[in-house]
Image (cartoon, rainbow, N blue to C red; front, side, top):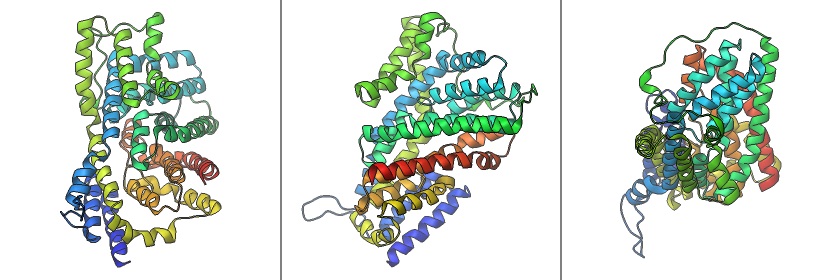
Length: 444
């Protein structure tokens, strides 16, 4: 029990250092992984009676670094396709077409742009893509009289819709929970519906509160060009018009359709999407190859922060799943983890906001290790653990003020990042409540 309490103290210290930005998230998770196995007295190196490795250098550092390999490659290919969407002009075209359809009706424009952003982020990922999309969407919203704070919320809530059907995320969650992609996808359908409905509710309620304002102004401060996505290359890409343009515009849906309806694996689905984009956007074979090479390199660069995070996630998961660590931590978890359906629903509804500030319910922080530990207990259906943590992830996706997308959106619209959190939290928590209840009904 003493060892378990000491691990908990280390966790709290590292979490505090991470929240206060004294150390980055990936460093905190690697340190937690190492300190956890050290406290649990896992040997540094060694083999068991059958010759299998039992040392943490092999199991945690070496094995953990490659544990999330499938998720890493899904992120790389997704980022590659995202770069092609940006460079070919598909991203900009989708946004501007949505704005044109809305005419001079702010509410319609907000809804259409929300749909466009959600569609794009089923494929796009990373801060660069947020900057690319936000730099177009936010000025349009503000220019038709939508207050900056409301516009920021529209952007982030819509972004959150897209994340529910982002296939690279599905692969990541599959690795964390050791579940099949189809099982992740099945639950995320409920999250897609709930997030979409609450985003629409957010837009309608904020419009009622704000009234119809028509201050035709937009942020004038230029963003740092070094952070932006590459501009559309008119020499490489066709004008997206007519039937071929339509086929290019629907390209974000192609990988999703292949995965859902034809059960194509995620990486091949992204490859088909990349080829689809080349066929309907490139002017010639040589320019297609040029675009392919440049976007591949840009995709790796854009994906780098996520790749580093996934390496540290794998180490942390392997650390907490070590039999010696589980033996130390299981008594603490058994005392906390609910085993009754009603208590399960109440407990995870209450703790869902702990996904903020890289808290214990945050799957892109220490939550991945805690989820693995709970599954290891064997007292909860792994699907129920998945449902609880993915419900909490809805709050983190658009509400965490430590998210790079939240910080950039706040800076661009000149509003306080915590003001955005306060505004969207009620809607995000309702989504989490819905998710936990659905999970309790389906998987308990």
